Image (cartoon, rainbow, N blue to C red; front, side, top):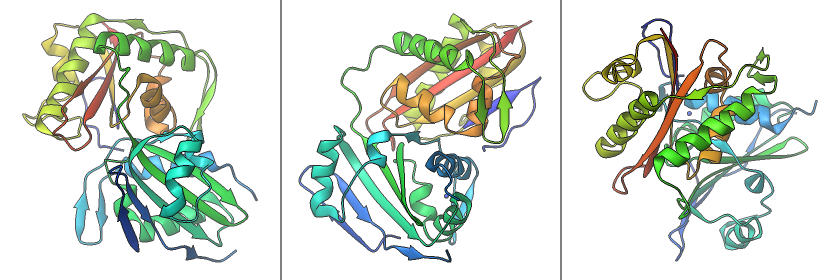
Length: 301
């Protein structure tokens, strides 16, 4: 979920399975029935962007309102899975060197474009698309049949302390900013690298810890604070601020990949008006998604 303030302004957060199995590994496997539509090749990463755009807004899944959730990280291995059901899915994950804690597979057929496939997914699979526990996505296409794999990996045991992971996010962000890229429908030129700001790192850590300990996902904290107030609390004088948040990703690489695959988050990363950033994560194993990430951008006054 992105947030961009120039200066302070309100910002809104950018969503049925037939059977399920619970295996010994505690991996939850859910296969959806194939849905048929009316029969151009478009890249599967376009469907990933559409899914992330969908997750970025509040939704009504049937009669139940669902809050916006973080973007999903594209995972090449998930797009290469070859499995026809739960019995062979575990082996397919082993072949891709992916250890999931939860998985759901959605499939729709008869759609020649990513937009038409997404329309059917939204109609029938709102709840899994908006499930905050899924953090990775793989999309494959065979003819007019689209398969979407939603998954959550086990958190990496090699995760470093938050300052190290925050600086890795800085490195990956600057790597992305060094090249022109398209965020959704908008093209961004390459822009200057950002520098690390300790106060923005502290503001990021404050919000990540708050989300983790209080088990919520939003730019607005439980006490009503937003990114501008959190930056103000660090005595950082700013002209403009922005914020990306995510939940569930197990590494800096995964979270930056998720942000780059979500048009509004990508736009924040490529923002030419920002010159500094900080980032941090926090973990609470009793929360819905275990790990929460915050990235704060700013330009000092």
